[in-house]
Length: 337
Image (cartoon, rainbow, N blue to C red; front, top):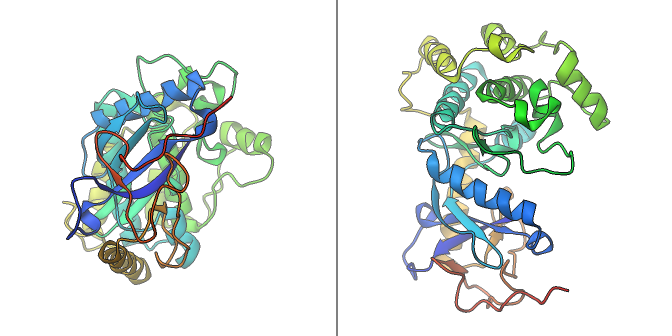
């Protein structure tokens, strides 16, 4: 639905660093006149604005009335969980406890805002130096919202859906996010998608009907994940329950359950440090806009030389800017039939 880019607020001309940057999501040109996508994008901005948690990437600005609507969130330095596990393998128990507590706290905040995330998956979890962050509210909705898909399509990621999500969007509840978190934790602990891969129909059947294989899950996680993956939503723990369980696990594995340390393994910590260094260098040189997530290292990919609001609008070595309106230097979007 949208493309995400690294950008800086318009007010910053020099002397800025990674903490000043934002992740800018712009709706794709080909769906900019699709009423359903526009409503979903507006809802994404509204839900993100309503959630307040140190474990959720904070919305910083948005304009859903522009011809190409956009929103920005704080830029979080660090790999996605999918990237970290793909590069370095499954996480050790100490990091799993940290991840579980942080994501449970994120869900507490989402549910307190009367919303459900509906797309909790490894690619939507960032591992920052001070803990995990939940990102991307692109398919989130409030409990009172109506379902926006009128075509019967299932919106989400099959291997990380809940059984009730598969049954239809109106059945999704807060406990559905807990189910998804159970699948994410199993992935982080084993390096595999719990419900496998292959044809979408087969994956959806396994999510809805099959008992997940938990034989290679670390023993301390088995009761937590098993309870979270109960087929009956009413039988699952709440996000608050998971916070307590994971906080106790963190203490058991030598950490204080107060969010003070991330507890990532050394290779992941080095990835975070490398990305911070590379993004700092990009800020110093005023390099062009980059698509997110960043490659590893951040300078490995050729910088994106265009701009989502109009092709060819950026001079070399010039960071694009964003403010309450698109950059003045941006050309208007190409005419659409």
